[in-house]
Length: 114
Image 1 (cartoon, rainbow, N blue to C red):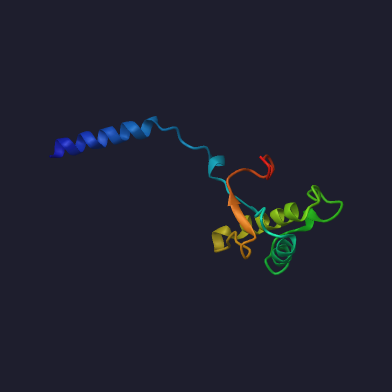
Image 2: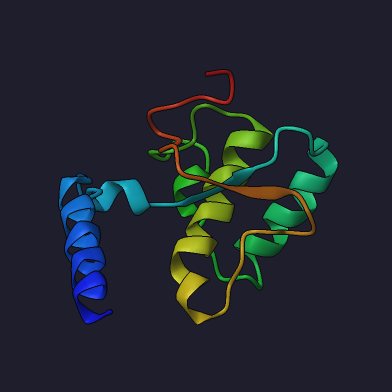
């Protein structure tokens, strides 16, 4: 019986050694605005995130680095993700009353239409 167990362990280790490890970037997550959420709900959630939620929304103000694209969805995604990245390890979530969702696709490299 112990020989059988040893063979199973060796086979498991062999299989695991053939699976390539994931790079650090493959485990990244971003919090973005749900494309089905109406703008008024996004605005309310973004106002909370940028206000009492503690997100830093200074970069999505006019004439700042992340103002463009100037859409409610893009600005809300920025605010949601700033909040999420700051607070995800302290109990913060990516929900915003259903206005947001998690993605593993970097939003700076993928659009909603990809």
